[in-house]
Length: 613
Image (cartoon, rainbow, N blue to C red):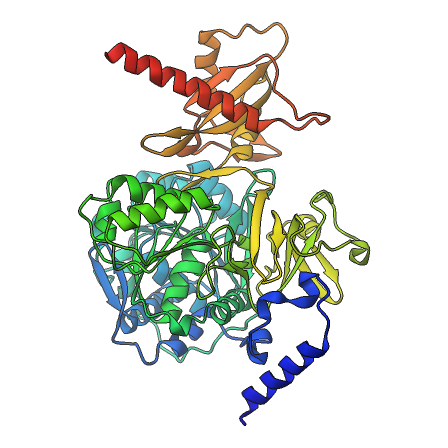
C-alpha cells in the first residue's frame, strides 16, 4: 500500500471514531471524501508565473490564448511575458514597485501581469472608465513609476504625467491590440510616453538571466472590493494567496478530470474572478482561454462562435447570452456555465437550461460559485461536485468555514472570538473563511484589515460579508450580501451604496438619497435615485436638471476626489418627501423603493405602448 492510500485509510478510520458535531468548522463536511494531502495541501513558496511555467511544461505548443484575432501558444505567452519583464526592468521597474494598469481584458494585460510577477513587482488593474482624477489618485497613492493604459491621446498622457510621479506612460493603441508584435522601433526621445508595440526593442538592450522565483509571501496583485459601504478597498494578494486558491479549487473540483479544451472569460480582468479565478485558472488547467475585451450585446454571438466549453460569467452574462445570441447558434459544445460576481437564482438557472436546450444542448451544468477579492474571488465551487442548483457549490477543500451571527458589528475588530457562538448546519449567518488564500491586507488601511480578520482556535478567519448557511454536505447557500450592487450587460459592477454616497455630497440641497436598480433593455439594469431635499427647497424640474449636471462632476469626500463613472450615472432621479425605513430601524427600505421604481417604469412602458397604438 502506497503512502497516500495509507494516510487516506488512517484519515477514514479517524473520521469513523469521531462524532459529527453539527458545526461546519469542526466537521469540515466539504472534505469528507478528500485525501490527506487534499485537506492539507503544501503551498509552494514561489510566484504565480513560475507555477504556470512548471504546469505548462507538457503543453508549451498547445494554444493558450484566443483574444479577438490574436492567438498565442503557451510558449509564445511565456516568451512574450518574459520579453516584457526585460522591458519593464529596463524602464527601472523593480521588486516591490506597484504598477498601475488600465487596459481592457486583452492579451497585453495578461502578459504584463506575468511579466511584472516575474520581476517581483505588484500589479494593480483599474477600470478603463476611470476618470483622470481617479487615475491620478491611484498613481500617487501607489507612487507608480509606470502607468500602462489603453488608447489614450498624447494630450491626456501629458497631463497625467505632469500631475503624477510616473516616469513612463505606456499606451496600447486600439489598432494594435490584436497584434503580438512589440518589436517596432523605439523612440528614445519620447518624453516618457511609450507605445506598447515598441517595448520589445527595450528588451534587446537588457542582459537576460535565469528567473529565480519570488517568495510566496511577496505581494503580487492589488484588486478592489466594494465593502459594505460601496467604497472600494484595495486588496493586497500575495503569490501564496493566489496559488493556495488555485490548489484549494483544484482539489475540490478535481480539475484534472475536466475534459474541456476551451474556456471563455466574460468578466473584466480587474475583478479577481476575471484575472485569477477564470483566466489564470484556465491556463493552469492547460486549456485555451478565450478572452473577451470587447464584450457587450453586439459581440456576444461572435465570442460564442469560438466554441467555448466552459463559460465563466455572471447572471448578467447569462441574460445577455439569452437575448443576443443568434437563434441558430449551436451551443452543444458548452459543458459548464459558471456564475460568479452575483448569485444566479434557481428560476434564473431554469431559464438558462431552457435557453441552452433550444440551442441543442441538454447536458450543460449551470452553477454558482461564491467568493470575495479577499479570498482571491473563490470560497466555494460548483465544478467537479454533484450540482445542487440552489447553492453556490461546495466550500473549498483545504479551507475552514465558520458561520457566525450576522448582526455582529463589522466596523470594529472582534477582540475575543472564543465568545462567538458558531451557527450549526442550515442556520443562516455571516460566512467566515480561513486558509492560506486569505488576503494579506487592505493597502494603507490597517484598521479596516483588523475589522474583517479575527483569530479563533489558532486560525485566522476573514469575514466575507456574505450571509447564508452551510449544509451537512458542505454546500453553501448565499441568502444576502452586506453590499448592494448590480452587473450591467458589459460586465461592469455598479455599487449602489457608492452611487448614493457620491450623489449625497454633490449638492448641499440634498439631505439624503437612495439608489436602486431597474431593468433596462440594453444594459440589463440601470439605476434610479430617490432624493430628499432640505426644508424650503422646491422640487422643480429646473432643480432636477441642475442636480443631474452636478452629480456628474468630481466631488471631494474625506479628502479624496471622487466621481461617478459613465455607467454609474443614474438614468433617472426623483424627488421624494421621505425615504421609507425598515420597521423599528433607521435603515432605508430599499426593497420598497425598488418595487416602486419598477412599478413606475411599467406605467411609463404601458403608456408608451398605448400612444403608439
